[in-house]
Length: 92
Image 1 (cartoon, helix red, strand yellow):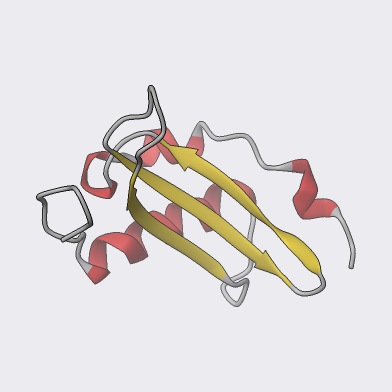
Image 2 (cartoon, rainbow, N blue to C red):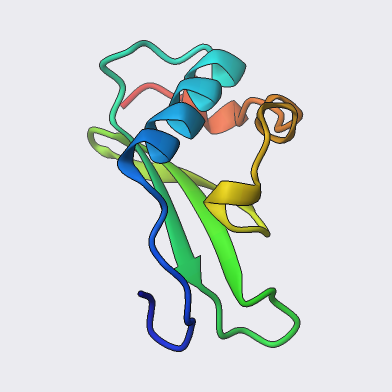
């Protein structure tokens, strides 16, 4: 469960599925450090649960994007519609 949100955590298999879609959409290699996390959001106007996608890069700031729904509600089309972040082309 998440603090302030009464819901179960997404399954490992589901997180891996979303990661695979992100790798496909953004052209990331299999060994690129990638995190997909479902978090409770307490900011005003924010849905109660959001999914954060983060690409971790040595010597550079992580690249993060958010989808304003729980992991289990995300579909492949949602991820493929995310434009590839230009920051991923930076070299550290």
